Length: 509
Ligand code: AMP
Image (cartoon, rainbow, N blue to C red; front, side):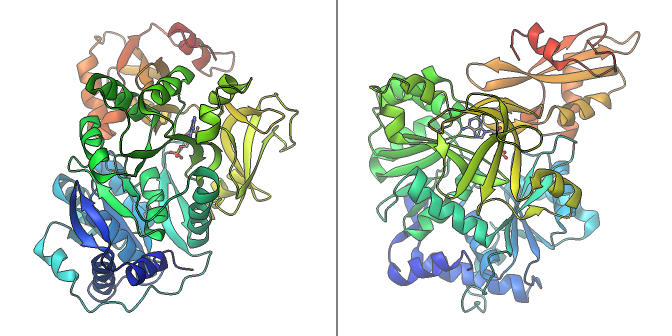
């Protein structure tokens, strides 16, 4: 089943219903949204020769056009490669090359940046702000979404790899179907009168939830700011009403801080689904105190998108339960479409309360990594996804994340792999050795800290190291702090002891 059929059906049933909004302004009804997507799909096929299964990369900030293009690609039976707009254009270009994308869709400053990087490859680029793009709406339209099998890849989602290069997670139409239906059974109800606000990137979690709202023919709202602005949300929610959004814990904290100072009590806000990084217990308690019972937590990862566990609204507010606080510190219970176990290295389930790796089995789990069979074999064994997350499960099935087996840092809900930052810093002539770790931070969850050993005679120079990072990696990945050491602590095999570095920052392992 092609996931774009949900758009077709919404357009059939509710052609006049508002579908795409910029702020409060309706830019397309469902009838118009579907007509545009079909026209664009026609242009993709005829003008750009995009065939079934071929990849179309999208590199731009959130916009209503983002949703039009994604649906057009699916109608044409092709695969979307949504690239995190926060990435360095060089990183984006690498993803475009790796995915073998035939076409790039972009806008604004992203367009100039990506055109520079990929000009040698001679790939065509569509500018969604151009007249040509608007002309595609009236192109010889594709009649209806091409028939797709459950195993056909709809979405190629790149996650940062521990070994430096990101890997393309192949999410099929079947995976997306499972993820979407699971929302209704394990996360929240959704209705035609709802709207979903894209305050977080469409290329990630917020975009994953777009299907839920298309299926209900509800409103898709891209804020005028294009991203997260607490003042804007507080102003929009009471006017648009029944507003739902996906938010990283950092965003929730900032929203709550703003709400307190603005005297906002959550009016118009229906549900905030939070996840992507750890939420402090005190923060979620305060969020409910200030904004009301509007929160649901999910735990997922690209490889099992949005669908590992969930902590429901009811459990979050059940203050009378003797284990309420403990549960608030957990990521909740397995979602309805997956089995979740905590296991040892051999994949054997460990007793309740013992730490092991979290394994997932079920229909939302990815088909595999794009053109990377070795990594797929290592990550999916006997059908079970190895998440790389360490945790425990109690007798009632509540899962608590204890640590990550990977060294990943989560800052503001975004993953940062230390290796990428280390590799960038090591290109600087003054840097002899470097090790990057996360430091606990009340606002961001964690911030990036680099421990640096300088070459003999080199001077400490934070600004120079910053520039070196900015030339190679995304801005959000660069260290917030540099600590210079004469040598890095290492074990007998010469492996850097990140645990000791974390201790130096006051973080227990
Ligand atoms: P990504 O693949 O970018 O979505 O990152 C997924 C990773 O983020 C997971 O493997 C977890 O380590 C972390 N994560 C996701 N949701 C949560 C959550 N609710 N609490 C804590 N960590 C989370």
